[in-house]
Image (cartoon, rainbow, N blue to C red; front, side, top):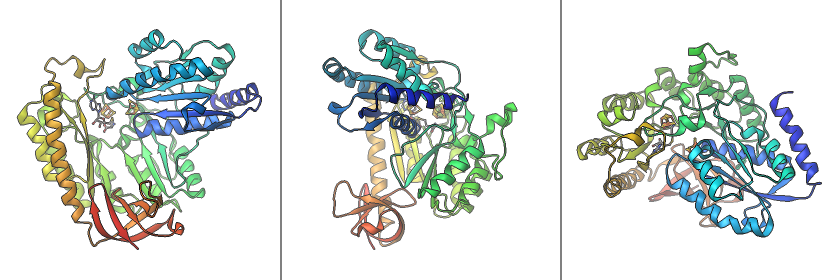
Length: 467
Ligand code: SAH
Ligand code: SF4
Ligand code: F3S
């Protein structure tokens, strides 16, 4: 039996075990969009097993953490929350399960076993698909269960998915990462790069289009090396509708009727080949906001980070893309305070930011991760200095965003209308191609549609428009 069919059997057994009682679950997700997408799969499985979602912790019969370990604060969050849940466990005997990237780190699972013995179930990133089987065992045997393996997981197709939105859907196109940037834990916790088969991706997106989804977000740690490892290592893959690379994947999705927008994260600058640039330029549905992680603007720091491009190469790539893709905007990730980063080297990062005027910059304080080369470097930057540099970068970015917002004033923007604004119920909210939030007054009929809006004012993190 294929592994997912087998799990579907376990889903039935869990349902029977509960004798169709309506139990409630709560999933707390940390981390990136890949984790969000995994949580959608966990929700899908739980609903198949007869559970209903709740947002109220006190009501839940099962609480599941999907963890991240890319930066330190995620760990503080998990342990803080576990302390809080201990009482609920004692009072109500709820099931507590922890999965995700942090569970691939032995020092973390050791700490949980020692200090939080009331946790029922631990599972890793390669065994997520076995959650129904593990849950059944945890329920029946009422003992602590651990299902974490180090080997690379295979890709399993066909898990049920309960999506967070009815308009925008995330589709993971590859797992793992082979890049080993020296600061990053992801390759150790997500394993080696593996791409999904073109047919599975295309069919999933066609199904989504049929259900009325309009925006597709393609996910992977290095999306523009889609199918690269397979080609290099001679691993079998089947071309489908002309898809044999990331560029051809974009082109094939662009043809799917009903889909209005295609986005993707994250591409790696070192793999940004011309065929991908051409595909972005020529595919009308591919959004012209491209996330291009910089990390640092200094060539020496980039080398220490093992990023495999120089400051000049990054700038040249951005220029080339701007020439080839009309209306291109860029967003980026930057790490401040990598070991050994000098004041002059940090200035290089500021200079690149000044030059490229990013639409959005995601800024991170460098965080030591156990097991990475960066953690073993001796010249760690003092916290205070990291913060001081972070604040300078933040001030620059914010001034640029304000300046950048001006260019929207008076323009007509195509906005995909998502629903009512959370902060103000008189307004609807949506996003531009460049992912800017726009709020405007309008009737419910606009929801789920593309709408031309005239931008009338700017407010730092959002724009105001009118029909
Ligand atoms: N694969 C993607 C993103 C991975 S994680 C890429 O290469 O762009 C998302 C972001 O977290 C990274 O781009 C990086 O900016 C940040 N990050 C990763 N490890 C970090 C660390 N140890 N400390 C601080 N930021 C980190
Ligand atoms: Fe981490 Fe680098 Fe892989 Fe991104 S490309 S996940 S930063 S190792
Ligand atoms: Fe975090 Fe894992 Fe994503 S470490 S950033 S949840 S791949």
